[in-house]
Amino acid sequence: MKLTLNKFHVKDIQFAEKSSFEGGVLYIDKAELAEYLLKDSNISSVDFDIARPGESTRIIPIKDVIQPRYKKSGTGQIFPGFVGDVETVGNGETNVLEDCCVATSGKIVAFQEGIIDMSGPGAEFNSFSKMNILVPLIQPIEGLDKHTHEATVRIAGLKTAAYMAKQTLELEPEETQSFEHETILEMGVKYPDLPKVIYVDMVQCQGLMHDTYVYGLNVKGILSTLISPLEVFDGAIVSGNCAAPGHKNATIHHENNPIILDLLKHHGKDICFVGVLLSNESAMLKEKMRAAYYTSNLSRIIGVDGIIASEEGGGNPETDLMLNCKFHEQKGIKTVLVTDEYCGRDGASQGLADVTPEADAVVTNGNGNQFVVLPKMDKIIGDIEAARVITGGNANSIGDDGTLSVEIAAIMGSCCEMGYEHMTTRLR
Amino acid sequence: MSIKYRCISNNPLFREKSFPGLEYHETDILSLFRLISSEVASGSKLLSHPLTGSIRPDITPYKTVLISCEKGEPDCTSVLLMEKAIRYTEDLYKLREVPLYERWGEAAKADFQMIDYSIIKQALEVSA
Image (cartoon, each protein chain N blue to C red):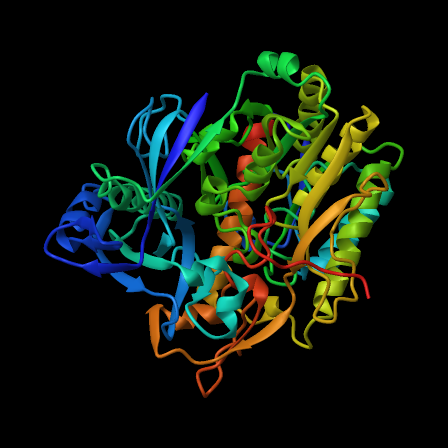
């Protein structure tokens, strides 16, 4: 399977009479995009705002962050099961808007959503602050239940992202990046002497605001399954998750999964990257055991020597992470875990809710309890009052001078457990 | 149909819905966990993870845990998980003089109740 990403760098987003992409500027016809989104009868109104790098702008609360992509050729369409039908993706060409994202806003429940600061110290904690961001502000119809509200906002974000990237469809990309990935049997023949490695992508599926979708299917109750890394780049995995903004895997993280990208770089050189196993994170202990046993058995059947497993969220998913580690190691499969920590403001507390002696190779992506004071911003997109109720914030988070005192858990993607950002923790 | 679990909860929404198997306790999460820990020590088995969802126990006021009706020899996994959950919660409670979970207004509390309820409902749907 071969997938080429056609990349277009976005220097600015502006509202205009007609949507287009010219000279690095993405022009958006608000009325046309609104009309497209309003086809969903659960939306009563929609407006849009733009945030640019370096501006004194704070976006709050944010549900999901999505990179605009649209397939130019190959089978299926981006975000299969939502924008595209359920046909297999991960081949042909996909147009990608770089330095640009969609951040969906609008309150669904009174917590769990995040902050992006476009300048100041808060901007250092994620890459989104360096992107041009289109923010759809979606108002649901009155009386819409929370589950449907969440789905409505999720799908509107995906449609907006697809609409944006579609503007480049007839244009020549500034750069291209191609990925090839063989079948497992071909890899066995081609790289007989390289260590075989699989990536275990743990996906959360526990209920409202805690779900993940693959080809449009909620992964709750699935047995662990195999997916091609190239399908993931085409939006086969979509976040319905607001499980703490600092360490939720937003859709953009899936589209640009850094572990997959790194493994593909090494593929055929010093390792053989076999593929991606999706292992779900349920609330029930039997399901956790089933997922970890099943995932480790798939690894054994495929015949891998090692795995890298990344977690989503914290607390109970640490049990899934440790079970995956334990059962793989017991089968003689070397395991590296990727997580983040909540070890108190001073870093002195134990950072993980569960551990196992087999977990002797662990990469962490920061301490969600790290406390920061963020300066007042001139412009707020969304509702600053949300800072009092989001994860990492509290009733006293907003100072009289407009400063914001929060844990970095409140900042979107700050401790991303796929390693999308630059944070880590170190022993003193 | 006989219920094969005990639903230990401090979430009033479960009481409102007359949830089958409910044992409601009006208390904080740490006390709820200590109560569950003693049940587990006396032979009940954990069916759901005590730290469900990704909402930290110092943030949400509500948690619901499913344990077995039947009692046997103490289950090592359940005992250890409860010990870890209690230690994790104690550490998080120490972060502030007034814990976050005590600071919410009614709208936020209603959302926390709904999320906790949704998680347990979905867990039972999948595991049924």
